[in-house]
Amino acid sequence: MSRRGVYLRRALVGAFALATVVLFAGCSSIIGGAQNTMAPAGPVAGRERDIYLLVIWPAAAVLVLVEGLVLLIVFKFRNRKGDDSIPRQVHGNPALEVAWTVAPAILLAIVAVPVLAGVVALGREPHKGATRVNVTAIQWLWQFEYPDYKDASGKPISSPNNEMHIPAGTEIGLQFHSGDVIHSFWVPKLAGKIQVIPNHPNHMWIKADQPGDYSGQCAEFCGFGHAEMRFRVIVQTPQEFEAWAKSQGAVTTPSSAPSQPQAVASGGN
Image (cartoon, rainbow, N blue to C red; front, side, top):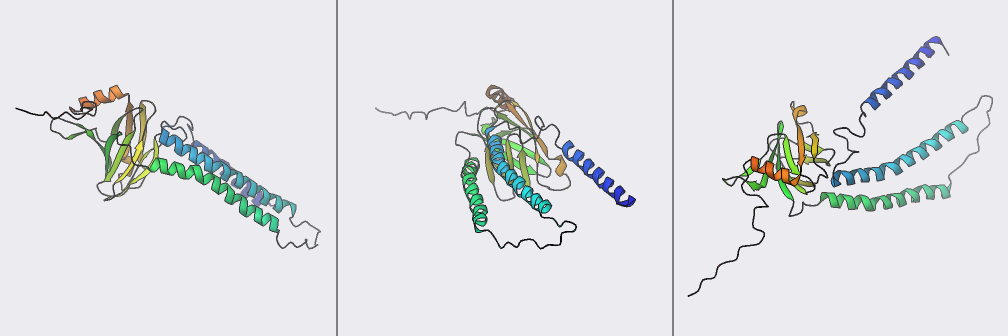
């Protein structure tokens, strides 16, 4: 190999090593990262991770098997110096062709059952007893309103922009609206992304296992201020959440509403 070829080869190896370092640097804090989908803090994110792993591991096994066979064939049947013989010509193998058609079909059928079950379970409407939050996305912030918690004038309370408060251990029903363009709501540790589209209300449900402060952001480029559309989901104990709602002016809450309809007084003479 010429000196130029040696330098080129070393440069390619160095570039590959640098690219590898940069790639893994982007995966730092793989367990405790603020926006790590592999460290779920609620049942929605947890099931989404399980579905992902259920699909990715068989796919990785197929990748290793196929690429391994390709490399084996390349090296075993490569053209060798001094060997000008013609290899034995093969015109197909029915048994192998049936096997690599049927096996993936069976694998996909097995994987499809839990995947479709998960899609249905995660895509359902929030339960009627869920704490409701109306989420409005506009360039470039998030607004959160609580229709179950009303102030003295009968209006729903709201939290500061880009800050959503929810109680832990409680299902939260989110209703999404966009005031301008397409946005995407994403809290990696609590749930996957959902599109927020103008004139197309959308919904999802989430639940946080433990109190904490979770990072979220808009995951759809929505204009020059897109990078500023970050928000926080502050998960509190139910008691702390009720106290926060009252501090925001709530005088009517689900817990203050009568559990049974009031009896109608019957008059008589």
